[in-house]
Image 1 (cartoon, one colour):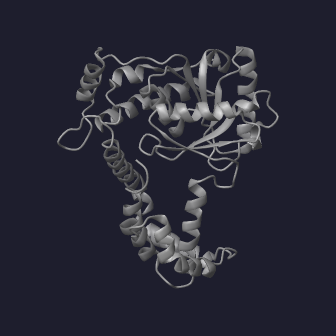
Image 2 (cartoon, helix red, strand yellow; image 1 turned 90 degrees about the vertical axis):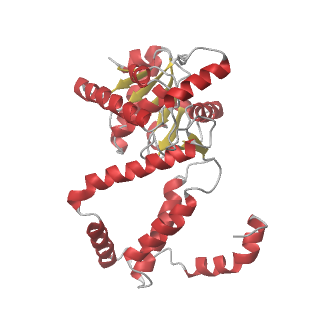
Image 3 (cartoon, one colour; image 1 turned 30 degrees about the horizontal axis):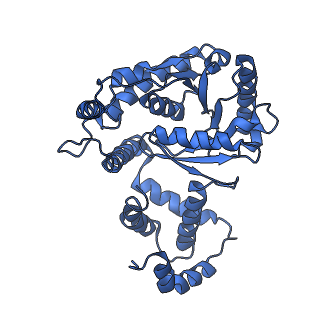
Length: 341
């Protein structure tokens, strides 16, 4: 909206921005009646019995967007706009004068927790060429995860998101770990994906810390998928705390590339750099915070928007439906194609 860039934008709209910001009441309590009104509007839009269908629709839309974003890379595309994985394999190999077989990375990756987020992480690292070990509290949970990861890899292949990799080869890289001790031997990266519960995360990271010492592996990066807790809240007393940091994905990670990288004050700076570089190599987009802040980046900005949306409804300035239109049919469309590639 401003040909002269950011400075021009603030020259044109700075006074309006200041006026609007000053009018916002950031200390307002959440009005139960307004919450109920917004909730009712949401349920009218998507009834409870339609939530599964809505989730599938959302994921399809995100997949389409991910494919569009991936077209900004030199991978081949079909006439339908999806990446042709088979052609990408051939073109990549031909350009390098090699075979079509993808290389396997040195070392391995460990995923602790085999729920939806853990499965996505496993598929991403397997796609990137790493042998992946899944660890969970029961064999049944791990066996189920292996089945679901194979399905996920197949879906990524069907939508052109395997980047020229063979789905059978990618899926075969993921296996179950008998113990954390054996899993961590030779591991270069570990991603914790247990429930967002402080006591559970403390207990799990204590086990990881002990397994690190037993395995003799003092260099493995220890990432947490925590979405709202600092890494310092559950690793400050660990022997290997300098290896720990938050690497928080946004669901679903196979379609949304951002990963918030949040170190503690005691996290080794080399670990931060190595984690950032590794995530980039896996095709993700790390955003590194310089210090721990509530909400990290994504939720902090998202909460600001949600708070203002609530105020607009609470003040009677707009209905929940029209606030939704402003984002879904306005800013959301613009934002999805703005910024860096």
